[in-house]
Length: 92
Image 1 (cartoon, helix red, strand yellow):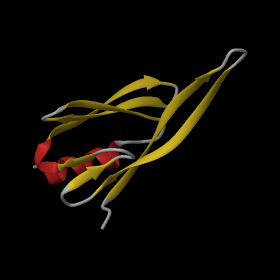
Image 2 (spheres, rainbow, N blue to C red):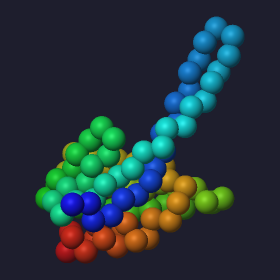
Image 3 (cartoon, rainbow, N blue to C red):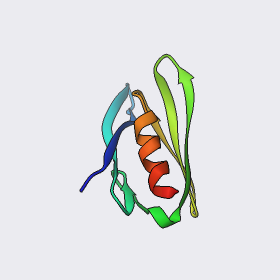
């Protein structure tokens, strides 16, 4: 059962001989009782040390998952406070 979700986006730039196209993919981080799942990764809560956020202004920021395998960054354009609160309550 999903406890919380956090929308994030991935920007892809497609370069051809005569143009550059920008495609924005909308994705979600899903928090479960024992893990967080992104579009292509799964992070067991036992391997997550912390979650943090950096505000970049104009409604954009970066959500960081600090794991034993490194730090993973997820660009966001929506509020992250409730997602971070839920994650930290499970990590405590």
